[in-house]
Image (cartoon, rainbow, N blue to C red; front, side):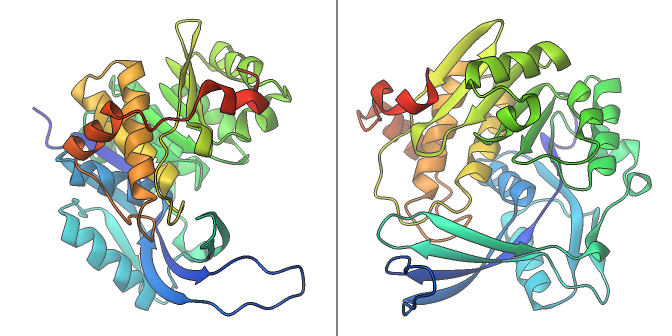
Length: 314
């Protein structure tokens, strides 16, 4: 048995969450209700989700040595995630984000910054750091490094999942070694030039040969293509407080589902449920639910109808 179920290589960030009653008109003013410092980041939050569900999880990344970095490292340590190959960069601020959360809808707007001194390079990732796990999860940042990690995984028969939301230079070197591609709703069209999500996902899968090509659709759920067939999983309706981190938790839950051997349909449904429950509290890791809690939501009828997806033409 390998020491870890999942290893993640990618971003962490420390967020300043600013809760406002509603977004003002352009150039206007509005008093904010609350300000909270909260740990987040694409891969870090996904790996924390995996650990919260009981997986043996390892995170590889860089953290600044400022107050935001200390908040992040303390949060990661408290979850039991292995941090043996996390680098603390001296004299470097941690990645940060200012997130405005509209209390009337739970939707958020993000302003972020990641200094160059946090970059991780391929030579800082060794083969044993990847082969120690049964699954690799990456994002698109520091593209040469994650491409290197994905190549190691492919050579050693380790499945790779990826969370990507925008175009990164050199990402074409990552995609051939990805098994489970789960993107934002915008990425497939931007990458392929095809506005129809079905055509875009099919093009991605047929070009790069991944087992599953999928996209998250926010409040509409998720759409995936596998074995030449499309699978749609509707989102769950919850009392949404904050959508920050919903996609990260979706990816963490999907990694858990892969490790546990769930079917694709169950994996998508479970990931949607976990993402929805995270939206019921403030912060990127606001409410990391248990599997039992997610399954109770899955057993409910609190789903959006297929008609709600009409704009996506499925």
